[in-house]
Amino acid sequence: MSRLLGIDLGERRIGVAIADGPGVGARPLTTLRRGRHVGVDADALVALITTHGITELVVGLPIDAAGHEGPQAALTRSWVDEIRARLSDDVAITLHDERLSSHVAEGRVGPMKRGRSGGPPSRQQRDDYRARIDREAAAVILQDALDTRQPGSRRSPQPSTPETPR
Image (cartoon, rainbow, N blue to C red; front, side, top):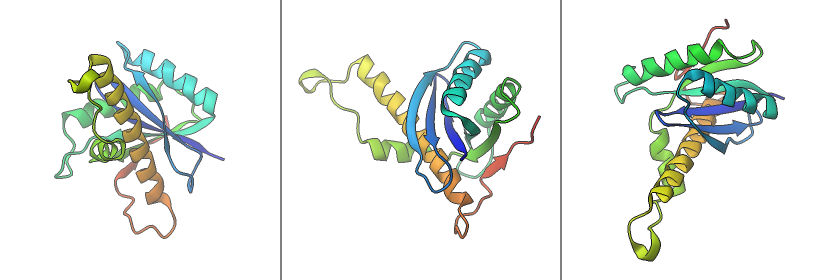
């Protein structure tokens, strides 16, 4: 059985989701704080890969509404290249269009809770909410990628970009 991790790469956090293969729903797993360099991110991912027996990473690729890759997509591709160099050859990496994943995640999670006595949320509440959204967005990305792989799917598989092995 192949197990997959979905990745929602952000500037400060990495949302992570997991699925036990096609036909099994993706679910939020954890949110990692981005390291000062990619090696820290790679170490955290290797720990998850080892613990959960992961065979593939599905990384959200930020594409704009018109379908073009911008500066953030270039940063994501660069990050993926650096991560790939630190992973086992047994772990595949696929890029998948992540358009609207955060929007869908916010719809699933709902609005941020108010702070004490109905006031504004505290910094901790805001950070916790954003981390939850990042995990949920990773699940949206991963589930979308899985759905496009299903036989007979009406969805086009074009958003996914398999990365070539090292």
